[in-house]
Length: 342
Ligand SMILES: [Zn+2]
Ligand SMILES: [Zn+2]
Image 1: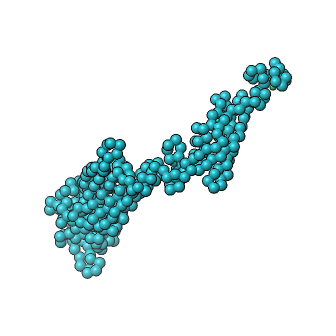
Image 2: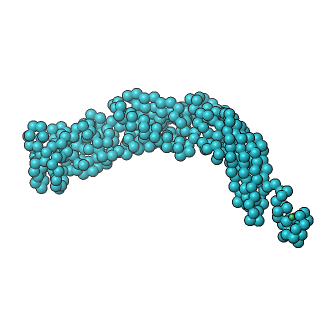
Image 3: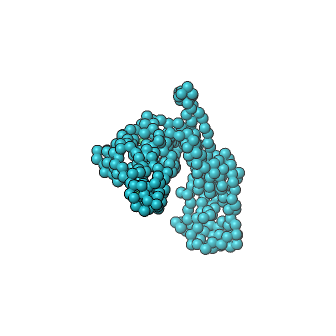
């Protein structure tokens, strides 16, 4: 067949013309020559369809091109590429739209000017306005926190917030915090996340969990509530020694308001409700442990020597164990000496 346009004897593609003549006067993509993209300078995110995203400019630009350009469905396996030069927040770009028609690759070019409009995003304006939905309060039971504990707790909360932000929780931030010996307060932008962080703190450090709501005015004719999540960390800590029920224990782990503890005269593990551990019956932790020289042992007894005074003492073994180290860990509680496991 002869092409009505070029007259060559070629297969007719469409409307009486061959493929190369068809391609000559068909445009497959169309788009604007100028485009505005919003950018938040505070958090370096760009806006796309009412959503602020922290993505590289090129990825955001492609999203906008996909929305604003119309590309013929005849074109298969379409790819979009851009090349841009920036000056004074104006990008002069060339957009390349490529695809295949009848196995033939077609690339079309479009000059595009992209203007960057600076605007504070929703999250940053909330943050700047001191917005918060919930307070996480961390307190103790009948004691004050040590500086080390405050540091550990602070970093636990901040690490969780940081990880959630990284995993895409853009609306999450710590508006403010307050720290003193009595405890820590964190003001958070999202109550559901604040709740789960407070629960994790309780899981990790033990203690009680309480929540309460207070009204914080009206919004869109609805009452707005702020939540307070209180974690009350117990007087005891992991590695503390305590007495209860005429026995002495070492705390191995904490879970909510239960503790797993080892009874020191038998080395048998028990789970004890934290409410039985009275603050006055806690002896302290690792600082109470004293190393002693191992002298000899029988099946049921062990003889130890004080490395400073050279006085020896014989104590019953907590269970059938054989000592094979030159030094052993001991603790003296209310005049009784115990071997400490581990
Ligand atoms: Zn032709
Ligand atoms: Zn922002």
